[in-house]
Image (cartoon, rainbow, N blue to C red):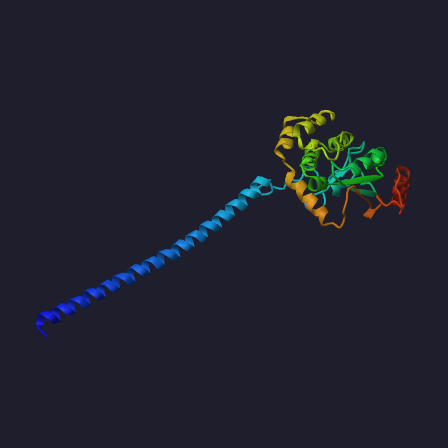
Length: 278
């Protein structure tokens, strides 16, 4: 074989080797880009899910809004609105003639209510006068837990909006909470009509409580200042073991809703007087 032929074969082998190296390098680059691209796609997908989840929470109003208890709220998590003479520990004390904090009432009525609940309206219409009398005499204090089961069962936001507005009234004055609470039940719409979802309606009804409607009250209602607090109160009720509203307890014992042991205003008075003597 001539020197020229050997050089020619060697040159061909070199070119073939170089071409193979270039092919391998090209294939490696493609694999690397493919892995990187897949990783970017996964990351982008994860970011997309996070944004959707975040946006969903923000749109629902459940994320990013602080839990703000109304003024004077008591109990675990400050989820209870007290009414009546609770004494120093209850933070809802009333002053006697001498300017000293009144002694706490000896008996506690606990009420779980929904402002859209017809059964709650029935309880309030029958027992309102008696409950107020026992409160004003210092014989009984009331602890209100505001819940939203009608919103959950029938849809809408009227239970939430009304509870927030009642909490706004509590911010203004505990006496105004009681008065506005009663106004909301007196004017309760039909259960299937979500009238209380309208903040303007709630503010108009608040005009029936002298001095309640102020710029601060309007802002509190319209901004849903206590919405997260109401949701928390409802969540606690949902895990409490009680299943319906109204749930009414006297010193922790259920006293309302049992057809075998019906409660009347006079019977409630007797029970409160008996409990106070014990």
